[in-house]
Length: 265
Picture 1 (spheres, rainbow, N blue to C red):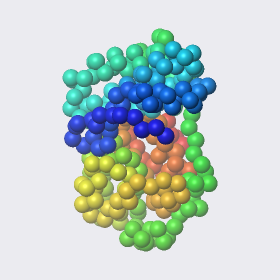
Picture 2: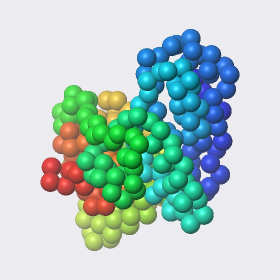
Picture 3: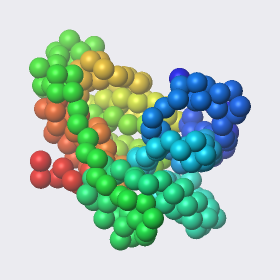
């Protein structure tokens, strides 16, 4: 792992987002010593832009994957009207110079072609996702885990697994949990993830914040919950929906993103 220079994005609630500013000489030497057969680009920052040029100069194969609907993020930081058109042109310029770009769902494939006009130079292909069904399994449900968070067998535990930032819609999540509680339902909530909204979520009644979890600990959190509430509307896929289903945890989400691919699952 090589850490490259970056600029922290200076907007409220942006959390730890940073924008890579390019490849330095030391990183280029490391890449040349590694001598890759193929380079995979996942984030359209200036580091990747330099990386594409490096691949072109050295006749090295490269591919890209689309993981985030970056344009849709801007509206949650109130800068879409300023940066939207220029950022859209930059993204198209970035991805259209990659021979093949893989997207996670057929929904995103259609959206990129029909709504955003991608695919004139690059080839768009679908590359599906999967999860480890041993790690994310109903067998990991744990009464001990629930008790450690203050949950009883009678409680309905509403789970949210996410980065806790505006575009993931913490406002909707908090409103739903509060309304269910106000209606007298035995609802308690579990939050897995980090972000600037954690301090607000932790103040809600009967909400337990776990911070960042991974591996078997994350699988245990899924299986020990009763429903996943996932309100984000900027997802290209939303791995959490697949992890929840594999863990035997039903899910509920906004029908405006790629997560709707699973609405009949």
